[in-house]
Length: 189
Ligand code: IMP
Ligand code: MG
Image 1 (cartoon, rainbow, N blue to C red):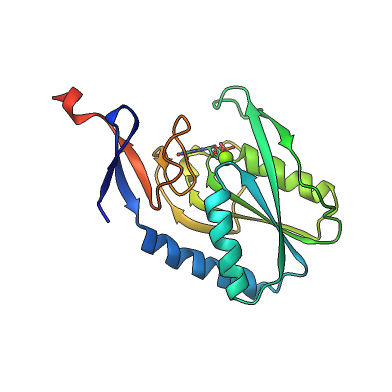
Image 2: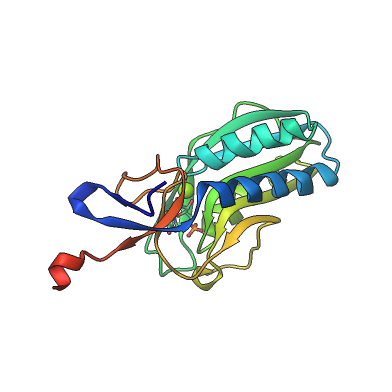
C-alpha cells in the first residue's frame, strides 16, 4: 500500500494509521466489548462518518460471539464549533426501542464531544440499560464538554483526519487507512 493518496484539488493525505493497525485495534476493541458481556446489544452507528468503523466493529463483535442488532442515526450539530452550547439535532433516528438494552454508539471521531454527549444522553433518556461509546479516533484537545469514550481506537493530536469513514468536504471516506491532509507542497514552494 502506498503511503500517500492524491485526490480532490491534488491534496495529499499522509497516512497516520494503516489498515493493518486499524484492523488490530478493531479486534482488540471487540474483545473489550465482548468482555463487558453485553445483553441484547444494540449497535447504533452514527452516520455518516461511523459507517466504516461500525461495519468492521460489528463483524469483529460477531467473531467474538457477541449477538447484536444494528441501527443507524444521523445527527447534525449547529452553531460555531467554538461554542460549548452547540445544538445537536436528529436528522434520521433509529427505528427500535432501546429501553432496558445495552447500546453501543459507534462514531468516527470524538472531538468537541457535543455530538456523542447528545447521542448518549438520548439513549439514556430512552431508558437504555447502558449506553457506551466507541470511536476510532479520539482528539482530546478538541473537547468542549465533559465526555469520554469507553472504547477508543487511537488517540491523536488536533489534526483534521480523513479516511476510514472520515471526510473533508465529502471526500476521502473510502480510504482504508486514516491520514491527515497535507498542505499543498507545490504551493508552498
Ligand atoms: P464533535 O461533536 O465535535 O465531537 O464532532 C464529531 C464529529 O465531527 C465527528 O462525528 C465527525 O463527523 C466530525 N469531525 C470531527 N473531527 C474530524 C476530523 O478530524 N475529520 C473528519 N471529521 C471530523
Ligand atoms: Mg460524524
